[in-house]
Image (cartoon, rainbow, N blue to C red; front, side, top):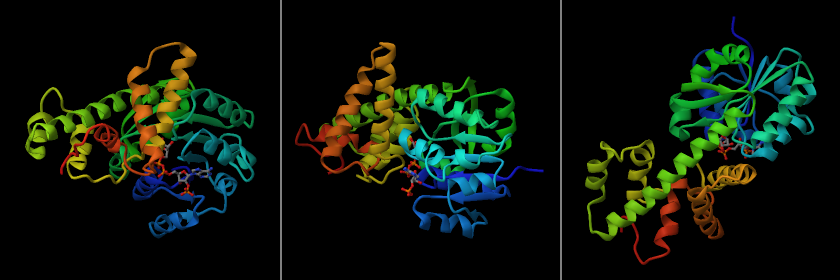
Length: 296
Ligand code: NA7
């Protein structure tokens, strides 16, 4: 008998994830700050809760996928939040990417109510969320990871228990350092290809299968070539993740030079009002340094 599920936060990622839980036949109660976003989920078989507290009262396992650290604090610790109604024995799984330290603080408050928490940030963009192929990196107790596995398997393909609470968030930041290095290289490479007068598609075809191949190149390279800036993941959220990396790197006194470069390049795009575009639009920050535009 499956447990009753709650899902809080139906943005680009949360929507696909909740739909995949419904497709597997699980019982899901949803809530989103902007109520209209619940409609598609309700059509697909979900019930709608009135608040995070309401969803939590009706659920054994509560999934959260909201933007940033203060937003997780708002839906968990705020008025009508998860903490008000969470039952002993329930499990809260946070898929948002937030501060590893705040994750541990929130987990302590949830555990004081006799419930449990896993940090389980995700990677794989909107495609991964829609197709159920996310990478999920989990921090927390093994027995709770085991309990959550049937549901996580509905949403993800590479599901890794990486350590104690907070470790999931730290591994996600490792993931973001790797993603952003590739993203900066993608922008630099595409600009170079354009300046060289190359055919963009042929160039992508030639390099994607070799040592330079990557998820970013395969999924975002064609988008850059077509100047399609629709977000799989927005600049604003990418910037937020890079800030988390830089804060943690500062605390640990380790260098994060490429992350810092990307953070500042994105800042120039945010200053131009482009924070809602996809993170592959980083190429525009490089284009702005010279009089060349990829794909034009
Ligand atoms: P989106 O598509 O920007 O969605 C963000 C979601 O978070 C969306 O449902 C928001 O509700 C919700 N949100 C944001 N702030 C709040 C507050 N303060 N209270 C309640 N709900 C809130 O982001 P993604 O789906 O791409 O990413 C979500 C997380 O996964 C993020 O941490 C990524 O780094 C990974 P709205 O619809 O705006 O009312």
